[in-house]
Each structure stands twice: as C-alpha cells, then as structure tokens.
Length: 334
Image (cartoon, rainbow, N blue to C red):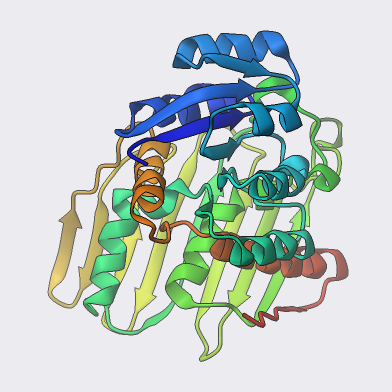
C-alpha cells in the first residue's frame, strides 16, 4: 500500500472544518467515500474533498467502497458500534473523541482492537500538538525534576454547532467533550490516577439539560501527585491554560489549540524560558499524518484506543464522584 484511502463517516461540523480537509491535505492520504444519514450533506462534503462515492447506508459503504480506513466523525453515542463494524470489515480505524459513552463499552472496542491486526486510534490532536511534544521532551530530559501535579482550566461560552441535543446520556457532557483532552494529558504525563473527586452544577437547564456548566475535578495519583481541572461554560470569552509542577520547576501553557497557538513557558531556579511551539493551523493534520504513517509502516499511532479508554474509565469515576459527593476510586487492570 502506498496511499491510505478513507471512508469518512459523518459530514457534520468537525468533518467539514477539520478532519475532512486534513484527510486530503496529508501526503499519501485521500478520501474516496463519504457517508452520512443526510445525502445532501454527504454530497456537499464529498464534492469539497474530491470523493467519488456517497453513501447513506454505513453497511453498504463498508462493503462497497474502496476504502482502507474509516474515520468516524458522528455523534458520540454511535462511536463504538460504528467502530466495531469498521474493524469487522477489516478497515483501519480512527474515531473521533470522546471514544464512547462509558468505560465499559470502550473496553469492548479495546478488546476488539487488540485482537485485530488493523491500526486503530481515537482522535486526540493535542498529543500531536507542538505544545505537547515540547513538554514531553522537557519531561523526558528531567528539566523540571519529578512531576508532583498541576492544573488546567477550560473556560468558554456556550457552544453547540449544529444545535445537536445536549444530554449526558448522549455523551455531550462538557467534562467528556472538553475534558477529554485535559484528562488524557494528566494521565499521559502523570500515569493512571487512583481516585477522582468532582463537583459540578447546571445553571441554564433550558440550554444544557442535565449537562454540567461548572465543574471542578481533582485527580489523585499513586505517590501523592494531584491534578486539578476547572470547567466553566457560563461566561463569554475563552481561557484555556495548563501548568505542570515539578520538584525543580514548572511548565506552563498560556494558550494552546484549539483557541490559540502560543508558546510553552518553563520556570526553574535558573529563570524563565519561553519555548516557541506553533502547531499547524488545522489541528487535526499532524494527527492524520501520524496515523497515515502508522498504517503505511505498520507501527502503532501516537493516539491509541487504549489511552482513550483509560480517559473514559477516569471520566466514569469523575461522574460517580459528582453524583455521589464521594471520592471515586479508579481501577485499571491493563
């Protein structure tokens, strides 16, 4: 194989603005088919991407298209079944985040992925951002000593492209949608947490149904590290920051994709250093590049189904804590 041929499933906001353009811009990658329940929407996106085939029936698209890989860009509650069908059809798989509605169904997909010889991934473009890569390199070199914790904040106004129904049952919780990346970064840098504590509230029930607009999450890790995440969707404007604490310094992200594209700041006893870290303006493109290379070379991609499943297991514990008012234990058997 010298080129990855894609079936893009879902022709909504993320497929139109980010994923679709990245799939055709990356070298050795092309979209051959688009599938959506709306033929009109699928035809419009197919024309934009130069795809020759349009489907409204997913099973037919898997059987009849010439695709090697499937990109799932549909609503969250459909991800697992569509992904399992793609693997059953022998396709490589890249699914949008969050991976599923809960950890249990994600474990089903993880089991199928481990038994498959296909390349599998869950969309997590922040792991391919220059901010993440610069930080990972500094931590690997021990530049801020041993990690002891950190914090992140995601504050943004109400945003619901397409006016899709919002409810926790459909997977549209802010903690799942916005928090996926932050929880993943915490477990990527600090390991699997042992407990979660969380408190959340819904102010605008007419807009948000039962989905939290304000939440604070505290993740505790074996060895004593603590990471705190603050969510706010009640105020205009955006604040999207992260800081990691180490025994010999700190690493701070003042602004990073998708809302800005700034530097990484390192603070140690020697002073303050600003490291330029500018990610491609289509945040999805580096992730697609990595996945295409993984398919063509037979290696594992940076963003794995396992890491996405870990994030869902942690998220389950966060919701249990938020609902009960008690600490939520986290168990990962590997």
